[in-house]
Length: 183
Image 1 (cartoon, rainbow, N blue to C red):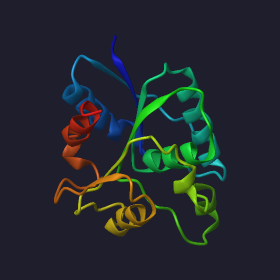
Image 2: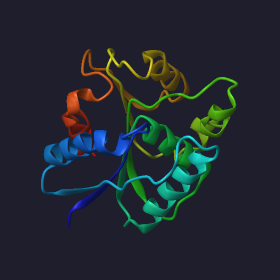
Image 3: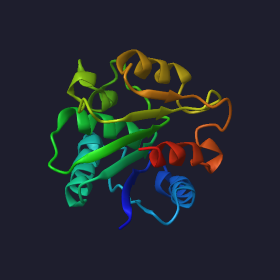
Image 4: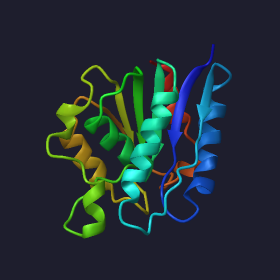
């Protein structure tokens, strides 16, 4: 039986199409023992409340999965996985969380408020859950200091910072696949 991986896309115009290469790379690197499920998030990112639409869809995807689920996400999707898991208790057992270039939302702008993590979010994540963060040092979209914010908040997580690859990791998630296989 294949191990299930739920991969949540990044945001932005064309995010689903852009990140399809990442999902395909992950599937290829993981091989036939894994099945990467890549649902399209349906939400208009220009309207207030889009984050709650994504969070609801993430919850539905997790609830529909079998125990032993592996979660992975890119950019906006990765940050919303952290938010979802820190604010919800699920019945589905999750065996690993793999976050590729997640923004650490901050500031006072109105549109950012629904994306921000709650104070003490790190203590609300399942204690036994292996968590991995990845960000290329040359990421042109998410500033590298966001990665450092997560390091300060989640010292128990594993952090990997390749020198190059940009925001899209040159469409190669073999580094993530190696960690998933190590579980």
